[in-house]
Image 1: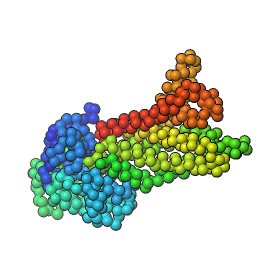
Image 2 (image 1 turned 120 degrees about the vertical axis):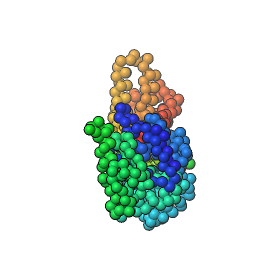
Image 3 (image 1 turned 120 degrees about the horizontal axis):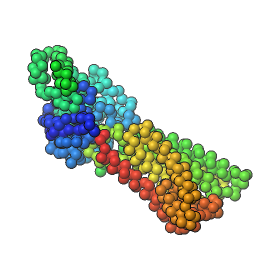
Image 4 (image 1 turned 135 degrees about the vertical axis):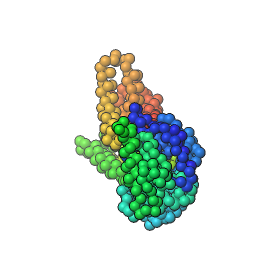
Length: 252
Length: 270
């Protein structure tokens, strides 16, 4: 379970995130969408314990990420938008570190890489992997051990369609194992395929939240889940444009 | 448990990056060159041996080691901010800083030992083993200086956050330590009464790790004999306790910046 209780973050006078209250249940996949600067990454970083909220708090599996960071992180996997480790890092070295940090045997790291189809690339550095392999490896390591919450910042960015499909499958697998998944994405196709619920953010605030059919209904778009090309772009544009107009005071 | 795992991870990363090997090659080449030039000065190769050549090598140490250590430390410190994936693991952030410092200290320390070792072998072969133990102590002083300025560089890098600012800070610190503090000391010498300022100026050595190492290095080779009036004055004022004080100063210059760096990094948003 991932819980935000009125979590807010200000940088001086700039509001990065307005008091956010959100719950992601075990096995649920929630997507954060919105334009750049909407507060999606700040939300994920607060949950990952990398950014301190100026108000409120975030918990992972019941542990406050600021007050009890060791317990919270033991149950959490985080994949940042940028790699988050030097590109020259050896895959096997990283796998050993993650396994050791999570209190597992070093072999657990190698096994996770093998399960991700990367057994033969363990000696390579991250720089030597393709974008898809790299993201698959990082996701395999982020979900290593007893991970109850998975936080992903643009997990399919800069991947080709095959790579993105592999990553989507890995996310679905983690959620199937019972992990609460919160991810931010500009790729609305990923959102339509993966998300049980969607939180639309604009300028640090939640503009709308709900299932895709609920959000579509709120802006007068008919939603058919089994459509080959669900109208998520239209729903998104209407929600975000309406909210931007409201925030900037030019709704009329 | 996270600290040893992080140290192994950082060490493996350094081995892949080969930064330590580059430092070793540059330093070994420069050390051997200085040793050979020092040995052959005046055509009296056999006379000079470890003592006089070491004073020449000390100058190389005092210029190059701070530069390399500050730059390496500053970049390593700034790059800590890019370790989001690792910082989100169940590890203490302060351990990330300590592991990074320890891995760099071992890598650069080994490179320094290799460089000075190569020079030592050259001196020993050409001029005999007299004062060899003191030469080993000089290697120790160089290692202490390396550790101190690596820690200072890491603290500067963490404070600076970006590589560009960190490099700027490293060069500014290097100028301050290598030249700036001496200029301040010379200014104070001109202003203060001769007798009253002596102890104060000697303690000013502690404010600069490079001066700590310089005083220690000169003291090792009885600088009052080989290094003129500065060495003699240092020996007179500091006596036997001075060496312990200066070595303690270098240890403090390692511990305090590291503690600061670890604290800053632990409290910062990434």
